[in-house]
Image 1 (cartoon, rainbow, N blue to C red):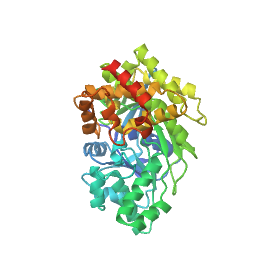
Image 2: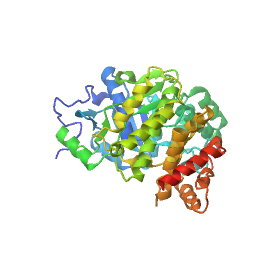
Image 3: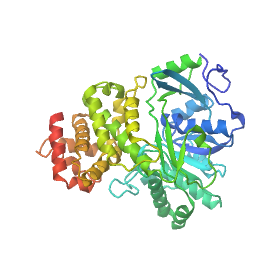
Image 4: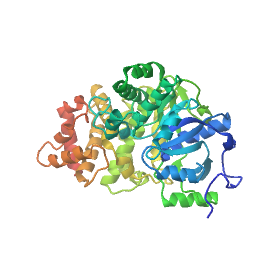
Length: 468
């Protein structure tokens, strides 16, 4: 069957780029060319180009995989997104990505794009673990493989912070204006975190570069939201039926999408608001809302699903007792939030339950369960601290923590950058009455307030005993 390319004649009913891709030039570099970016930021950019055409094509960069870059090039960087809900499927072909690069095979090409003065914005979706954040101090983790490499060989980077730093160094050396760095990963105050990492890496090679970054480069915070399951053969078959051609890059997503961005850019940016993006002065209330209500509940669902041998989120939400647990968790989490401008939090929580239960979305609990050591400090542990400080017993967060620890204790292998430490903690736990002590001793994992709270820790122990 014919494969989707720029030569494909699509049916008139299929939503496709209304602008001329042949004259579209790059203005954005995106690092992290995975499914989420292609279903989120690239779609917003597609809408921005349709609304107000300009040189805002995206250069997509994969740090590790070469396959995605090769597949993108084979399809002229075109692919489809199938939005699915109870009412049916809606397909659109996205054209905002104009170039795909694999850093592992052509790092110099990536650096050339970062140094290109036509590039105004660099966006990021590389996952929490890829940044190389010290779990104790919060700055650069010198033991992280990419950080260690890039500190030693700054002009030949392999990690995201190294690429950003070298790209900015080249622009400074050429007397050019810097690009804006827009992090779209689930990190609290994500822009501020990336600013710290880049300035620390810059300082390690040249204090003058660090000072220039600090003074001239903007790192706006952002909050992103869309459920995007990993693609499967069924995903591709569904796209083929809808499009009439083969699309090896098709992805599925829920219909809901949200992007809240701090309006703080060095220079120009696309009209992302045309796709529904919200530009605000302070992202933190929205970010905290999403991390604690959506992401925290998602993690709880994932670990419940793994304990109950339920493959998909929708399966977990098909059990009334689980729905009650999720709602109870949300009610505890919402009490740790400040008001969020323009958001009815009660409606938002009802909306989340409906989204999680969406029968058309097959989101694997194992996919969400990975990298817990990177996700749970902001999703569960800090909300627990806030709940306890306000006089609550933090029981719902203790339960979610116990479910996570139970998942680790039953796991033979673990997809987590700190898997060795966590599996050792699980092994050590069988030799003590205080089953969670070895977990609370993992450096930088739990806040000191939780480590010191014997009552809360005993609650976690008690709940853990009921789970395993």
